[in-house]
Image (cartoon, rainbow, N blue to C red):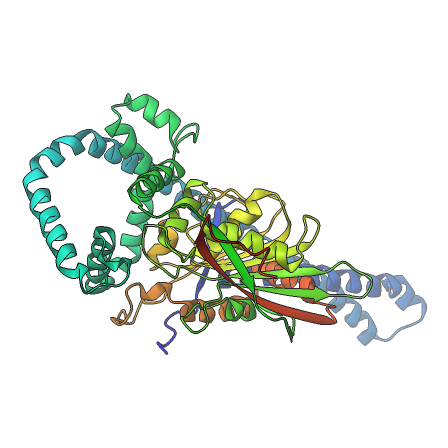
Amino acid sequence: MWPVVSDDLMVSGGGGIAIASDELRAQVHRLHRLVDDLHGVRHQLAGLRARLSPADLRAADAPISALAAEQELERAASLVTSVALRTHGLVVALRAAITAYGAAERTAENLMQRASAAMGYGMGILAPLVMLQMLPVLGITAAAAVIASVAGAGRSTGSDSDGGSLLLSALGLWIRDNNELLTNPAVVALIRQAVMSSDDVVGGLARLPPGLAELLGDEGLHLTGLSTTAALLALVTHGLSTADAAVVRVRGGAGTRGTPAMSIADRAARIPRPTVAEPQQIRIDRYHRPGQSDSFEVYIAGTVDFGLMAGAEPWDMSSNVEGLSGLPAGSYLAVTEAMRAAGVTADSPVVLTGYSQGGLMAALVAASGDYRVEQVVTFGAPAGQVEIPRQVPQLAIRHSEDLVPALGGSDISDHTVVVERSLFDDRPVPSTEVVPAHEIRFYEETARLVDDADGPELLAVTERLRAFSDGATRVESRSYVASRVPVAAPVSAGGR
């Protein structure tokens, strides 16, 4: 396993304006407790002095040492008051510094977004001219792709022979060869800005007036944005797809007895890792408590198939695109069907935990308002633009070098607690993975650090999750496998 590089967690939350390391937030929390303790000591000293006043000591003919002790009590009380005031001043200063840093970060982000929006609009305006100049190159490339596809048709038994898969394979090889560049936090930040400006490119292509494009976009009324671009991409891929109309079928496995999840790391470990031998994408734990309604924990896997054209596997790139666009993604339909089959109702308390695409689907389920969601926990999820209701707490864990969350754009839910960790500050980037910072094993490491953190925001999250699983006398765990099937094929009712 690749060694842990950094244990420093950057936390933002409470409106998204206060950003600081967990250690700094923890120090503020400790200083605040110290102020409370000092006030308690001051009250105790005041009580002692009230019971042993100088008049009482003289009336009792107390020795000189008792009078000296009373004077020391007075000096101690004065010293404690002074320390308490200075500590409180330090707390105020640190909180102001955290808030000012957050405000500066938000201002810089807004300025960068406006600049990238203007650049995207300009690219949209110039795109037709650039494409015209590149037509000869594109023709040669397309011909080569057709020749390669025809040549490989006799050898291929799957969908990998289509042009889209060839393109994705080439893209995957390029990313693998350049993973160190794409793992740079600065490049990841640029990718996030480019994603957020995709609607401005569309505005430029459509020749909208600049003011109107800005008014409709993220800088104005938010009528267009990442979801608009994703919807256009989804429509294009659906139009190019030759697959028959399909529905999602969900099959549940046998239930097993288990134990409740007691930590964030425990929840990360329960997220399914689909393989050919074990293709389950969803796990649901049902908590039984005497005299109470059952509660549920839902764990959702990440992307399995990176093909853009919808196939048998619902956890594919088409579901990512559909999820970002607000269209009914295959994996979303699978999750809600598995929840129904597991017995989840609109009134059932639910905690949703997801990794990558699973985190996006968890956020979408919470945003639907159809369920009583008590907490959402995501790891490396492209879910920034999913607006979750304020009454639903969300913890988003991501790595600074992970480009997958950047593909979901900037955070729109300002109450989300975001934990960010840098993995490769002082170590070389692993060359064995395409996007190493997105590997779930690293997110499991970060989850353990979050469990050990003592900042107030993270303590509140961990305590809330612990309270959710406390008191369960029996836990029944069940895994689900989802697949797309042609409409004409019989569909089981929840896999039962």
